[in-house]
Amino acid sequence: MSLKVGCQLHPQATTVVALRDAWCRADALGADSIWVWDHFYPLYGDPDAAHFEAWTLLSAMAADTEHAMLGTMVTGNSYRNPELLADMARTLDHLSDGRMYLAVGAGWFERDYDEYGYEFGTVGSRLRQLEADLPRMRSRLAKLNPPAVGSLPLMIGGSGRTVTLRLVAEYADAWNCFGPPENVAELSGILDDWCAKVGRDPSEIERTVCIAQDDVEDVDRYVDVGVDHLVVMTGAPFDLGPLESLIAQRDSSR
Image 1 (cartoon, rainbow, N blue to C red):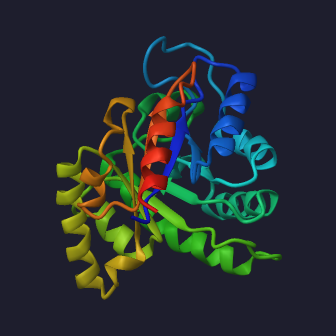
Image 2 (tube, rainbow, N blue to C red):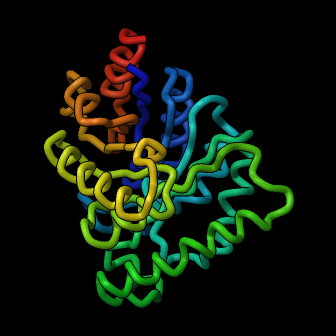
Image 3 (spheres, rainbow, N blue to C red):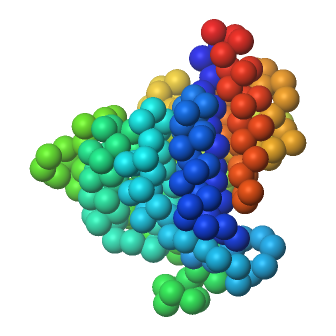
């Protein structure tokens, strides 16, 4: 098994001190990846609880850690100019010695848009913007001096069968969706079909899946449907026991 494993740390109802402790512990445990989400308000619990911005946190994470790949799971494309976003990711790639993902999605959390003055639009308009912005990111990455020092894979998160998975086939180095395995298998098959239509080798796309803390047993259920990378999601107080279980299963199969 060549499975990679990681964790997503929810930057809500917590402190920066607690977040830094959690990502340092995850890195020391041997996580392959560490993520935060890109929202401006909590997604569950107290809607007005403490919350921190993702890309600023990533700067500290890049400096604090040594081994894990880092990223947002995933960035709301509408929140930042695509050229700027590419430059931010490239700069953090240097700060982390080549350990960054540039992970994006069309966006969905309406409160982020309303409170920060972005146009929410429709699912269709946000997907059209993502489609227009992806080649702009690629173009800017090719122009930046100096270039990224790592591979800086472009990840697209989402499960839209008609547009999102087509964009994954056309542009992405990695794709993220959510469990359970049956959902992954269905969506992965649709992605394979899109790859055939656009002339892409589906094996070029890393398949990453976010899972809940109670879904970390028997990772072979995910490996059997073609998953390359499992990411367990956790909020404060950041119990890393489920991550340790993933790491143990990963290591026992190597």
